[in-house]
Amino acid sequence: MSTGPTPTTNLPVVPESHRDLTRLLTASLATVMPDDSIQVTAIAFHFDEASGMFQISLNDVRQKARNLRRNPAATLFLIDPENKYRTLEVRAEARLEPDPDFRFAAFAGTRYGHDFHDLDAPGQTRSKVTFVPRRIVATDITPG
Image (cartoon, rainbow, N blue to C red; front, side):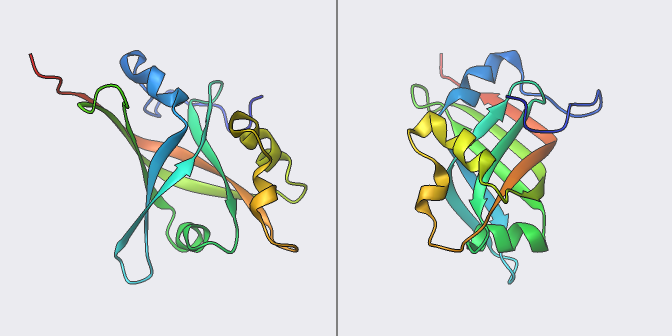
């Protein structure tokens, strides 16, 4: 299921050497708090193969959603669980779109065995967040 914008030639892409990391179950997401400090949270994510972009389902009352609405700068950071020397950093601009029928929440949650909307209190809303990459840094400093 393609759920985001299509890539353009000027957007950075995840290199083939690190594509396997796009299948991990969690990434660290860093956003900017109102006082300019950094907030980092482990998040579940979806990597859209067609667009080459990472996406998440986010409850709109959470601090992360408030941070991204105020300042869309974000970084996703993935660490290879088999080799701590291989990492992928995605510096991006977050684009939030309402998910009023929770369709994306249900889709994104299939990898994790549940609909993410199940985690919400009654009356809460969700957004689909697409991370448009500005820079991608693939690192492998494996010794020897």
